[in-house]
Length: 117
Image (tube, rainbow, N blue to C red; front, side, top):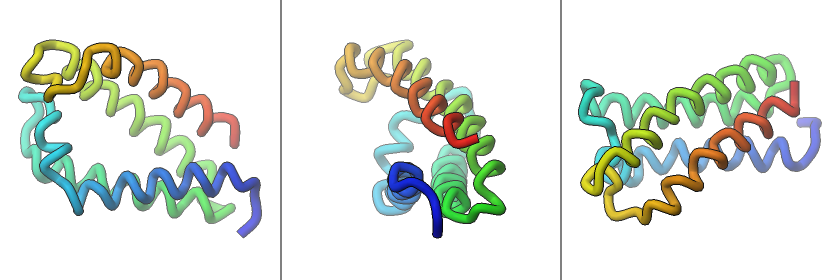
């Protein structure tokens, strides 16, 4: 393994986030937009994607693909963030200011990934 520590921090965060999809799927099921089908499958597959992309960040040969995958995944996850702003029920009890803050954080995460290209 070679690379800056913050690359491995990012990898660890995605791996941990992905594992949480399996440990606590109910959290993610509560925030799934109603217009998407197969909620449980989407939660589990998004967890798989996060773990694989996080691991791929640690493999120099796969790192660029992982970065593009992470950016694409974060763009797709914006659907959930905007959905949660659509109503109190969709917000799942999370304060509106936190939901609003998550959107620029999402773009910050995309920028962080992009910095390694």
